[in-house]
Image (cartoon, rainbow over all chains, first blue to last red; front, side):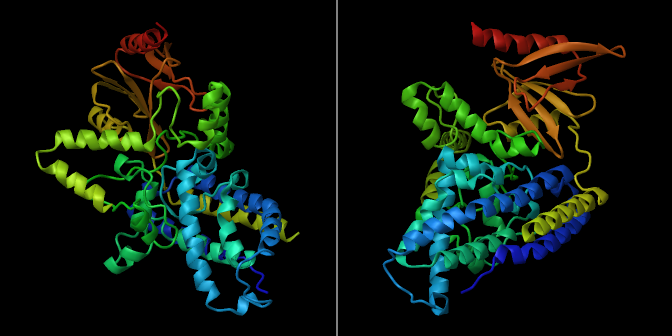
Length: 316
Length: 139
């Protein structure tokens, strides 16, 4: 039975690539890194490894219990069924798309996932800015269909590890657009820059892990348009602090505070509705921000552009 | 034991990378250089915010911007990037006098954000405008 963690083995490679990107930044874009931000991002990475190790046993036990009731049996030596690996990898990536989309659209999930987005920088250290509180959400539920189907939890964990390794290198501004065929199928630095952007047109777009095709299929794809506007990274309400613990828990604190203050009939909505939703319409969701931007854009541009925007929306 | 070694190794790697970033001078010293730049940053960071009045701190670390309808935003450098906040009813401002110079200390009401001190012209006018927001919201 395979017993290894691809992400742990990849750590020396991560360190080397961060060093190489820092040298690139030194020569070309000194503002691409900020030592205090790097410190916070890398501490997130270390803390998430520890948090993951503490909760992994619980989730593994749950998955192994569910695995008893699997629909397909790959046999006692399931790891020798070679074709199961790529199938598992693709299905795990589909799972990643949905868990990631929920991570942005449900505030309970966002309270955990916001950690990955709260840096105003976009570099390889941002890739390691992983949450400590993923175990407090229902993210684990999304893997259950794969387990039920018959994929062994270790096979899923290894595929998820390779998925995470793939996503490391796309967190950079050092690489522009890649060949069209690659951009069409794979998640790339260009597509993922869009995902980390807070410009209204880019909000809640490009949720893919490895294959960008999921965004194209499910209608959440947006092309990067560097010639039209400069990307701003981070979150709509920027943290404005390099305090690690505040960065880890700020959204949990905000959400629990909102639930505490809200009238009873709205309390659950603060947990389950999208970030930015409020019962008194005092805040804005990403959809509201984008709609207002679209409206302003169509008003300020000459006749005929509205049709172009509508067609852009259809093709996205 | 293996986990402890891994944690210590990771901590050493983190400190090494941060040291390298520091030694290479990454990040630098970013400032708001002009009123025009402050306007541009505010338009970028705040949706539908078109300032008509701007006051940039003489050190370039922060700026205040006001729209025609009386909304005020605080722009503050956070590392190499600016952070913007629209001032709400919990915002307050006091004019401080030190070394024969006036500075406006703006508190946006967020504990973690902390106060911003701005050496700007006509700090009393900006204080009055900030106070007016709180009054209007409480009325």
